[in-house]
Structures are given as C-alpha cells and as structure tokens.
Length: 593
Ligand SMILES: Nc1ncnc2c1ncn2[C@@H]1O[C@H](COP(=O)(O)OP(=O)(O)O)[C@@H](O)[C@H]1O
Ligand SMILES: [Mg+2]
Image (cartoon, rainbow, N blue to C red; front, side):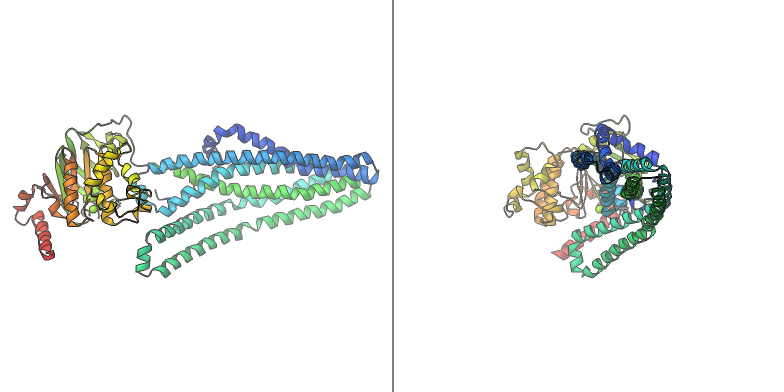
C-alpha cells in the first residue's frame, strides 16, 4: 500500500465514516452532549438582544416606560454574564473531549504503525508516513467535534434569530429564509475540489517532510557533494507547489462566500424597502422593524459560520477517510490463529525450497535449502547483492517467503507466534540502528531484565570498555539520534553487546564485525564464539578469515545456493565459487601486507 497514492475514495460516504469515528467518540458521549447542550444558550444570545430591541423601541423610546428602560440593560448584562460562564464550561468540555478522542485515534494508529511490517517502510517514505499520521487524525477527530459544536451553536443562533424575525413579521421572515436557503446552494458544489486539493496537499507535505528529514540525516553528503543549492531548489519547488495547490483551491472555493454575501444583500435590501412600506402603512411598529432588521443583520454571522462549517466538514471527512484508510492498512506479517509459542530451540532451523522476491517477478532467493542444527554455525558467503541479508531478514519473518518453508524444530515459522519467534532470535544487522538515549539504555533494549553484572560482562566481551573511558559519562553517555556521536565500529560493538544481552538460542550476524579493525575484530570474534556456543547460528561475513571455523559454509550466488560444505571441502573443489572467493580475498590480504 503506497500512502502517497491516497484517493480518499470514500470521503463522500458520510454515514460510513461517521459510524467509524463514532467508535472513538462513544466513550466520551455524555460529556460531548453536555458540551453541546451548554452551547445552546450561547448561540441564542444574539436572538435575545434582537428580541429586546422591540420593547426597547416601542415601550421605552416611544411610550416612555421607565421601568423597562432600567430592566432591559440589566437583563442584557445578566444574560451575557451567564453566557460567559457557560462559554467557559463549554470551552473546557470541548477541548477535553476533542483531545481525548484525538489521542485515542492517534494511539490506535501508532499501534498499527509499530506493528507494521518492513515492506510498508520500504514502500513509504518517512515524510509521507509522518504527514499522514500527524495531520489527518488530529484534523479529523478534533475537527469533527469542533464543527459539530459550531453547527449546533450557529444553528441555534440562526434559529433564534429567525424566530425573532417571525415574531416581528412572518411575511418579511419568509423572504429572509428563502434568501438564506438560496445563499447556501453553492456550498454543495465544491466538495470534490476540496477533496482533490486536500489529497494533493498531503502528497506535497509528505515530500516536504522527507526533504527536511534527508537534509538532517544526509547533511554530510549534502555538504561534501555541494548539494546545498540542489537541496534548496528541490525544497523551493515543493513550497511553491504547495502554494499553487492552495491558491487553486482558494480560487475555486473563495467565490462562494462573496456570492452568498451578495445574495444575502438582496434580501436585506428587499426587507428594508418592504419593511419601510409596512411601517408607513401602519401594519408594523417601528420597534418591530428595528428588531427585525437587527435580527437579519445579526443572522449574517451564524449563517457565515454555518457556511464555513459546511466547507470545513468536507475537509474533515476527507481527513477522516484518509485516517481510516490508514487503519485499514494491515501488516502483511501477522499471527496466525492458534499460533504456537516456542521455548528455545531443540533441533535447529531449516530453510526448505525457499523462494522469495521483494518485488513481484524479481526473484531474489531461488530454491534455497539450508539447515543449521543447534550448536552449529552456518556461514553464508557470496557476491554482493546475492541475497545473504535477505536470508537474515526471512528467519525473523520481516518478510514472508513466496514458497517453500522455514522451520524451527520442524514448525513452520508462520505457525509460530511472532513475539515468541522474535524472542528466540538475536540479530546484529549490517546497518545497525541505535536509539537516542544513553549507551546503557541501548544495551538494555536487548534485555530489560539484565543486571549491572550482565551489562559489565557484555561490555567487556564486545570491547566497549575500550572506548568507554574517552566518553564523558561512560555508559550513561547520550549518543545522539542513531548513535551519531559514535564511530561505525563503536556502534557495531554496542549492537553486538545488545544482541549478547538478549542471549537468544538463534543468532544471526550480518557482517557484524565489518566495521572493526583487525585487532578488535579478533577479540570481538572470540567473544562472539563464546556467545555462539550451543546456539543455532547464521553468520554472514565478507571477511573469509572470520568464517573458516564455521561448521558449514553456504555459498550464495545470485540468489542460489551454489556450494555447501566445510572450509576444507569447498577449498578442494577445482574452480569452485568458494575457492575463487577465498583466493581473491587471500590475494587482497597479501597485497595489504
Ligand atoms: N527491501 C528491499 N526491497 C527490494 N529489493 C531489495 C530489498 N532489499 C534487498 N533487495 C534486493 O535483493 C537482492 C539481495 O539483496 P541482499 O540480500 O541485501 O544482498 P547481500 O546481503 O547478499 O549483499 C539485491 O538485488 C537487492 O537489490
Ligand atoms: Mg548484505
């Protein structure tokens, strides 16, 4: 599923989307409704003021009723004070419920994200993932409540004002309501434009975030290749693309409000003329006309809000639709029903007739058969891009194979519960990732129950103590995002120690010592040998010296297992792949000496 190709296809299916978001609104329903009820009198204030103008004009100004002259202003102040209190309560409730609903949606989405399989991250850039996860859920869940509230309070406001108008003159009111309905028509015409522009904006903002991210992560490459201008112009173009999309939306949508306004002005003009006639012919008091015209003028605000709310709601449904599209993205790697758990490994790991492709019709592994028994170390060597790392990816089920099977103790790994499977495997990757935080925190990620002694042991074994003295806070040194403040070899040693702490029965080492110098490598290798005892081990290495002692060596060439045997067996093959690899390596080594 490519997130940038989003269509927000169901965004006009309001019933379906409402039903889905209702699940998240439901737990807070009581407080949400309470907030709405409180909002009702808030909306009605304008109506009360407009209503009060009639007695004020007719009774106070014309008939000089002094009691009312005092009461009306006080009444208005009292009502406004009450309204202020309600407004506060309402604000509090709306924010509380809005944020709660948003949080629940975000948490549910994040849970999906952390469980997502690697393919999802292969296909989607970090930028589009970030922008999809951050903007839509917030806009959708908070927006829907805010706009419902606005709809309620402006609706009530409009309703009250129309009531006052009807009270003063039903004939005039009729004109007002008809004009109002006419003014709303354009709102229905623009929803498709809003959807398209919103999808485009999402795509562009994804690119913008990706560029930001790459500017931070790739900063050294950008500097050394003098790509500053290039990076800047890429960003410049995206910012302007975003501008164009926004402006095209403004161009297509913003005529709506002036048209509504113009239609409304016809209504006002007509009411003025007709009203003057009614007053002069004695069929209406001037107080009634004043109250009516005030209502009509005041009506503009709630009607405008209603118009905006209708536009906003289109945007919100697009965001809702995209949010639920994310919810519907399923991790392709899932627990089977009735998946079993494993507790340690008794026999070993075997790959049987394994075929695999990342991308359709591009086979990467072809009919691989390979077995590692407990206590055995299988070394995997071969050409770059041949598929060695891919084998390492398949055993913890980062990807599922296309045909064949991978078994642990004769149980297909697809029948094993994912957590249990991964609990039993420790991997040191080719490109190791450290988390922001301290070295110790990173080590503990291998095993949160490790004691200080355990940590001490692996720190020595992986030769971390060698560079620990140079760091300001030893193990408690903050290492920056992705371990940026450490050297490649240092990162690798932390990754090895982290895997050692995990102490899992299956160990996969993907060029785990490639960044170490010969001296450290020899020592770390010794520690790894200790770690590997009685375990089931796959070790991928480009330096043949590190794999000579393996029980079996598997040579992978272009996705095929071309040779399998011990070091000596393979060396004795005339023109064998391993022999050639070994000789090339050997020749290189003697040149280096
Ligand atoms: N995530 C991926 N998506 C698509 N193709 C991939 C991915 N990872 C690796 N490949 C391709 O699979 C092949 C094997 O890669 P890999 O297993 O990393 O090789 P090795 O580790 O032996 O150098 C290569 O052709 C590579 O381009
Ligand atoms: Mg590799």
